[in-house]
Amino acid sequence: MKNNQKSVLNAIRRAAHKKILFLPHAVRQMSRQDRMISGEEVIRVIENEEIVEDYPEDLRGHSCLMLGYGTQKRPLHVVCAPKEDYLAVITAYMPNKQEWAEGFKTRRKR
Image (cartoon, rainbow, N blue to C red; front, side):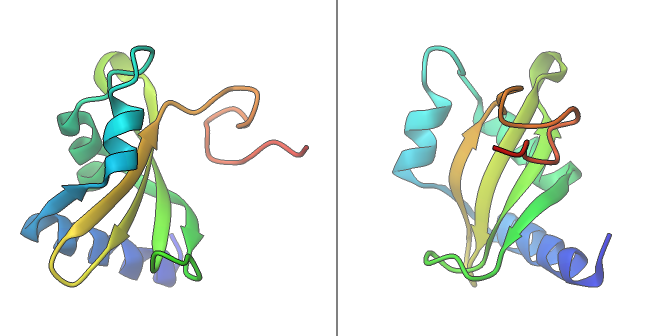
């Protein structure tokens, strides 16, 4: 893991220990009938998994895409942004095999 990713991961986990805020878009995506992603699954990804893409120039502030596994070992992507007083969960979804290479860490070329 690169030093920058390690510092971002530390910032994410520090913010998450203060408070986690699920933004409306995340709640809509998580509660879709074909997904039904629980808050516990998202928290598990945040606490235990890895950053696969870093977005330091995001308009919402520095954010990143994390990969982890939920119930029944299904792959999950979580986009989040650490803030001073909380962690904003922007979205969470199950990555699509057509868009992501095996392992769900690298986007397929279009």
